[in-house]
Length: 121
Image (spheres, helix red, strand yellow):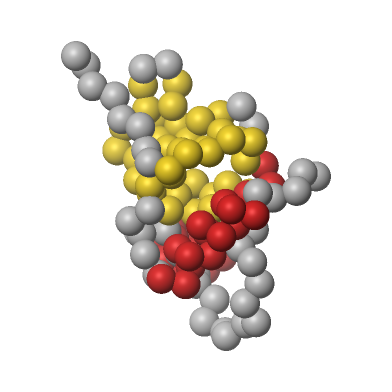
C-alpha cells in the first residue's frame, strides 16, 4: 500500500473541517482521471443515502450510507468524497451530469486543484 500524500490529506481534512463542497479537484487513481468537487464525508453519505432511498430496487442499501452521527476522535481522512464528478475518457466526461465517487487517498498517484470540463468547440 502506498503512503498517502500529506498535502492531499490536508486538503481533505480542510474540506471535512469546513463542511465545504466548493473545492474542485482532479485526481489520477488506478490510471483513471476523476474530476469534480470534494464534499465532506457526512454530506456525501447523506446524498448517496437519499438517492438509494428513492430507488425502488436499492432502497434497502440506503442505511449503509446514512451519516454516522456519533462524535468520534478526529483522525486524518483516508478517502476523498467527490460529487458532481466525472471520469474522463478521451474528450468525454462520464457521467455527463456528474456522479458520486469515493477514492482512497492512498490510491491517488497524481492530483491538481481544479476540475476539467470539455466543450464541443
